Image 1: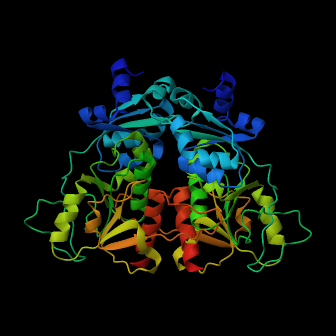
Image 2: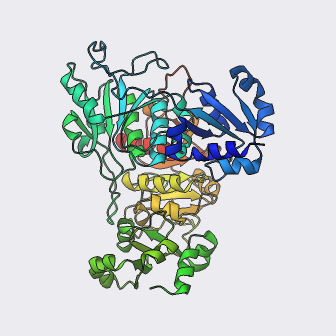
Image 3: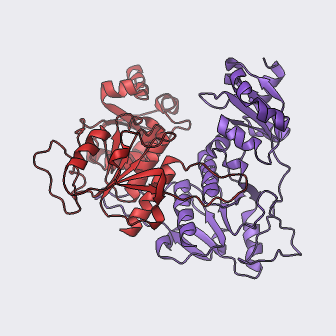
Length: 281
Length: 281
């Protein structure tokens, strides 16, 4: 049985304001919770059915995580899912990462010493070479799915513009399917980050997904660089366009006389682009 | 102003039972409604704001579609969207398509004369050569997104197993972003369809997306065949596995010491596979 205060507190974490106030977010479902337990995230508490607790007691004890037996009707109240799972974790939001990520400017780069840029590398010892940068991704499902794609394709760092949807929105967290535990997502001012990069030497390529780009299938791609993905309906912001060094485009093969699809979903386009980069490089 | 009966009728179309009873579904938003108006679907009525009606009057008159001015509070009631758009169409569900689709069994195929299989070709005069077959896709967003992908990559026909989510579910319709107007989606017994195919001559290849497949990036792919995509969590049904002639797999490039993503979302995998087929063939 949870207290009224616990119920109120956890329910409040569905709202961004309270997530920021308490520096906590919720994650639900066995796989996602286990991935977070086995990551660098710090778990404030586990809320689970008696059955789940019995089955997973050794892990929880080993990690010394506070655990609270939660009744189905209580789970319905604290869950953000329409069909709650037997386990929900309250997870601490990590201290704010630098808003000026440090990016290697060539494939065998040195870290610019004078810079205040820094990419957290603790959980990813090798310096990541291929980054995703997301400009104004608003749909929680898209952001979560893109983080899952980044994980699949070994892109350890994802940069998000400041107007992207909140990473800790429950729908984002769930859509990552656990990949939030492995991918570093850094919220930053993309224009500033790209400006600094373009000033630095090394010619770090910036690939922009644009409708007027050249087919990605016929282009030479490098094993390092930034892949810039724009907003679901407006594409890449005008102020970021000048930083793009190579425009890429996924050609359509539609042939119906009734017209064809105007575009691909942002996460779908990201997946096809990431696959092509990994395949070619 | 709509009547109480109209409000009740249209609201009921959010529910599968009533969609089947009335053979109607709803579609919302300017682009989707326009794509449907310009397709072979028959529109039973347009429900829109006065502004929308004024701007689009010529199209509606030309097509002789009944139109009803709808107030914002009425739109909120009939809409399935959390933020209703200014226009909603009530669309007739086409008479049931054959549950035994006819599939060309080689790239320069003749239609098997003895067969009761038939693919509607009216809106797509060229015989489609590369098909998607979806086994037990349950998530409305996935089904809609896959139809949009099929449209982008020129796959005019998508076969759905009988346990896939209803095509006319509002979330599916919206996720197609208008591609439902251009892609033929045929619900059928996939096991029967694949069995008939395997008996027929011609060696029509069946590509199955499986975790134990060979990397799609290193395989030879044909310009004709069926690409079989399985359920979001259980993959391809055991009874369909024997029909697969070539197992395909999207390799992961994950490298974090914390593990890696277990899988890709079904629509993401479909997109990467379709891109690879179109690119290679």
